[in-house]
Each structure stands twice: as structure tokens, then as C-alpha cells.
Image 1 (cartoon, helix red, strand yellow):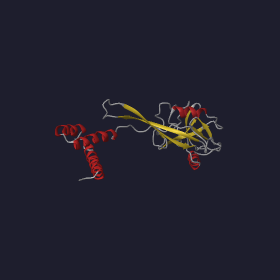
Image 2 (cartoon, helix red, strand yellow; image 1 turned 120 degrees about the vertical axis):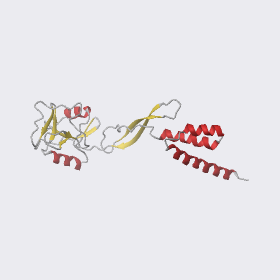
Image 3 (cartoon, one colour; image 1 turned 120 degrees about the horizontal axis):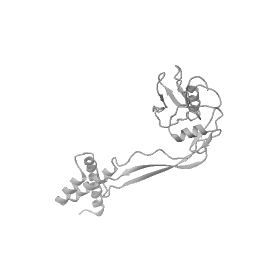
Image 4 (cartoon, one colour; image 1 turned 135 degrees about the horizontal axis):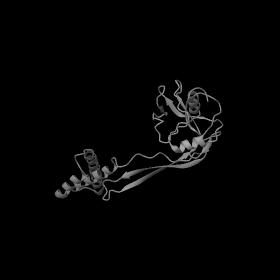
Amino acid sequence: MATKQNQLCILVIALWIGHCLAASLASDGNVSEQTVLDLAEKSNKTFLKLIGLAIRNLRCDLDSCNTWSEWTADALYRGQFGVKTRSRDCYKSCSETGQKVVENDSEIYEGKCQAPYSITDKFCLLSVTTKMNYSAAKEFCEKDGGHVINVDTKERQDLAQNFPLTSTYLYVQGERRVTGGPYFDDTGRMFTKRPFFKWASGEPGNGATDMYLLLNKDGYHDVTGKY
């Protein structure tokens, strides 16, 4: 006669087998949990019902959530700590109500800003007065653990235009691949297609060597040489 311990082992093995079968069936688009549950009801087989319920649970986890949003965090100096958050929409298609819920995630992080960087809103910003070409400016920023500002939102454009600069102009991410062509940021996205983009008066010049972008309070300028 089987002991309680043996019965427990048998139950665990049965559950494991049921989960494996459910995972296999769930990956097959032709087999639904309802089909298995209906068969279990007709045949009065508890094991089939277990598999059907397992498939239902697995389907809730498969492709039921959108991608995570960007982390939301304030800029902090090194040695300071904060909490960053992100969220995503999840749709529980297997639930009775089909309810969409918001899933939140959070992490503790340490700030990365250090003097002489200024903390402005969510960003660490540094204005460099030394004149250099774009490639040198890009290398300078990357060696310092940062990057040339990527003005990919209206918020960042407003921030860059109103930041207390020691120079009239500042470089932003934006390079032409061919003379007279569009500008792309470092991620490969076309810069000049952004809805908030606006050329300054008299721009673009479209000179043969005008391959980079500068920004001031009037708008964007295509340029070459040192600034």
C-alpha cells in the first residue's frame, strides 16, 4: 500500500507531466484549453482537466503584455540613490472579463552625475567651451561616460535651447551620410522628420561639407568646421 509520501511524489510527477503536456499543447495554435476542458468534462478525466487549466494559465503568460516603457528616473549625483519605475499594459485574454491591467516595475539606482555636470530636470548636462568639430565633441562626451545630446523629444529640445550655455550654439546628434541628404541620430533614426524640428531662418545652407547640426534659440543650423 502506498504511503502518504509516495502518494505525494506521484502527485508531483503527475503535475509535472501535466505542465509539460500543457506547454506543448499551448504552443500548438490548433489546440485550445477549452477543447481539452470540454474533453475532460465528457470523459470525466481529472488529469485532462488539469492539463486544460494549465494551458489556460500558460496562454495568459504568452504574448499578453506590451513592451516595457522607458525607465522614469530623476538625474542624481553619484552617491545619491533613487527609485526608477517603468510600466506596461497587460491583457489577460484568458480571464472571464478580458481585463487590461497595468503592470509596474521599480528598481533602486545610484546617480551618475558628477561635477561639473549640472542636473537639469532628468538629465546630467555639461556645456563645453572648447571649440571642436563634431567627431571630436562626440569622442569627448563618450570618454566622459556620456554622449552628444540626442534631441528626440520636444522636452529635450526645450531643455537644450534654454540651458545656460556659454556658447551661442551647441552640437546635437545629427549627421548626414551624403551631401544634401537627411540627418540621422546615433540610433539611425531620421532627425529632420521629428514634428518639433524647425530650421533656423536661412537654413539649411546645404553646403558641400555641411554634414552636422547645431542648435540655438532660433532653431537648427547645418554646419561644418569648428564651433
